[in-house]
Image 1 (cartoon, rainbow, N blue to C red):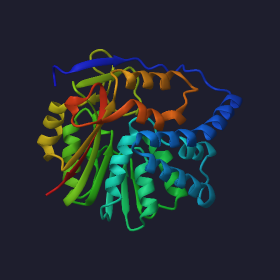
Image 2 (spheres, rainbow, N blue to C red):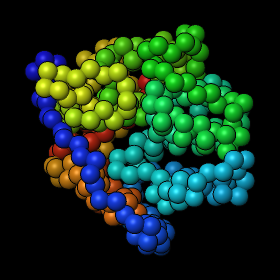
Image 3 (cartoon, rainbow, N blue to C red):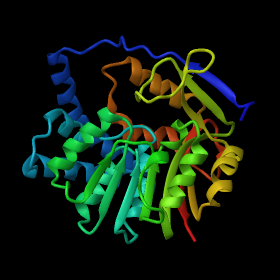
Image 4 (cartoon, helix red, strand yellow):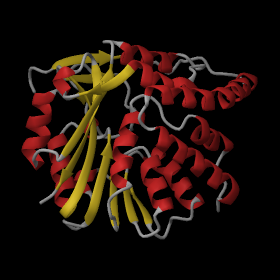
Length: 319
């Protein structure tokens, strides 16, 4: 870990803001083109298209049946561009497993809220606990929980997973989508998740990966957490796992997965260029994302085969 490659990012919050008219124009264009690009993505068998449809159904449910007001902006995003980039792969990987297993008690560790909310809304036999130390994001999740009438079986916790006060062997399944790469002591977090899982239970993890491991640091604290700055004044942002790092920090802690899948960019540098455009361009056409995921990304047999950056989904079963 001491010799791992490090990069330093400088975030600027000075991105141009759109006027109301520009936002309205963008929304109208997106509402027309989003379904078209979703259909085009089927040509490439883009993962996550089925889950994208689930998001649309949830948006319609909230629009016509919600018990509390959800903003039209949130409903619009949920309908027309609920996810972007490799989330299409990650949500597809996790959703396919969740859809076929029996679950009574479910724990999610700081994943994007769509997976747990849709799961709990569809399957009334499940009780869920959602951990998220980002208070602003947790507040938004709380609004959705109230709107869906899930307050009697969906419980939100403002804490780090390492300090979560659950009894060991409590959960049938635990999910954590692109989270542990943001935790400096990822091994401790993984150990805690494993302790909370029942024997026979499943842990579903996704993390960013690359043929060569690296760590990213940034000059901005995105999550408002007590993460110390390093000697250059930057905050730890995330790590990209190579095969060696996955084995040393995950497999040695909880064993090898029963199933894994790797998805990544076809051409080196595309992911970072794409993310840079999203940061800088307020008119970025998010409705193109499912098409881009099919055209510019593909599945790989293993992490070492990646041409650039990607993500790995892993399913572990506790004996």
